[in-house]
Amino acid sequence: MERKRISDIIKITEAVAICILVLALPQQVVAQDVDSLKLRFQHLYLRGEMGPWKNLVDSLRAAKISEAEDDQLLYGEYGLTGYLIGKDEKALARKELDLFLEHVDSRLAKQPKNATLWAFKAATVGYAIGLQPFKAIYLGGDNKDAVDNAIKYHKNEPMPLYELANSLYFRPSFVGGDKKRAAELFEKSLEIYRKTDPNHWMYLNVYAWLGQVYARQGDKEKARKLYLQILAEYPDYVWVKNELLPDLDSDKKQFRFLELEF
Image 1: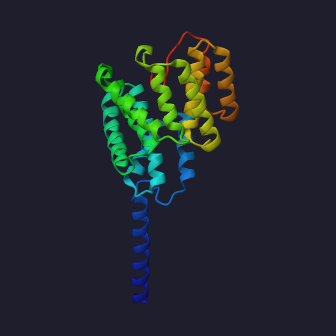
Image 2: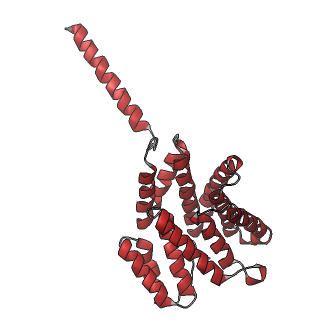
Image 3: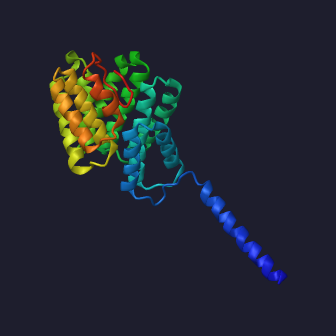
């Protein structure tokens, strides 16, 4: 009887130990379906929940993940860094940018002809300029080189077109800026996301950017139509519903990535 009681105690102890080990894992995403991961990011993006977004990014960094999951981590880092810059949380933004840049460079070392990775590289330069605008003088060329490589290796990925659009829109015309061409590229990027990856949070982001482009061009009705179209698909899209659509009737002329203003 005593032996059986001891055996039962051992079994219970082992079960408790296993539970503790499982609970200690930092929200691991090992063996998680990539589509589910995309939906998690999309859900957080729609609601502007950046605290849980950072937690998800950190859990991915800590986990052993597949290359496809790592791709989503890059997008997560991209979004988090832009958000922090927009919030003017420079110390945190620099920390995240360093991690993002290191991640991008490590992937590029293995995949030097990956167009999306070069688009992320261009974004890291843009973020560095966002943190210290005076660096635009000597970092502008690095941004253009990265964008050029993204387009050079581009097949049908939307991200390289999106970063080229950003570059053309915000670059002065005397150094190659072209707002009309940029608008066309935003539209093309949006269309690719719609056809190939509509559950990705970047699809929603490009949607919002394009509306801002239309508004900045003075075509508020076109922007309004686009925003209403977005909300018909995603009625809980907080940024569009609570900010961008109401801003059409004000004199605001900001461009924002999440909360990033230019």
